[in-house]
Image 1 (cartoon, rainbow, N blue to C red):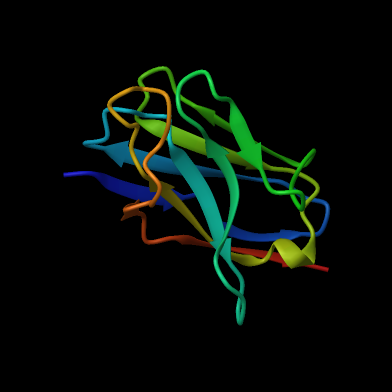
Image 2: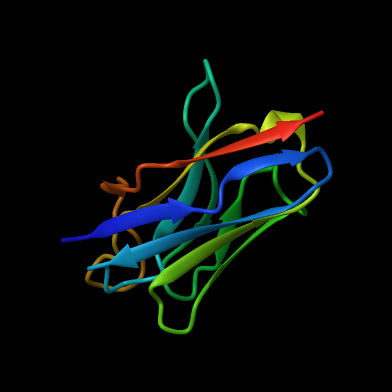
Length: 125
């Protein structure tokens, strides 16, 4: 069974940094086809960063390009979202999720079907 758990959220002043972690278990395709999402109050959940299928690179939402980066540990059981130059509009609950690599190894399945419970990030102005 795939399980994910985020950590590292908290409160920070604008311009500060936070590093979120996502511990995964049962997911053998790590870090491929994993993503970071966020949902601010009153807004839809949005994908902000992701690892694509092997060899397909990464994705970043325009709002976080140049400020956020993603990485994983050697054991491939941990995913990280480094967030720098944080802004008040980055305030949200942050989630990690997985959707699996297709058997061809060339693409991800369409839907993210495993999610962590989320971690709150609050950026004060």
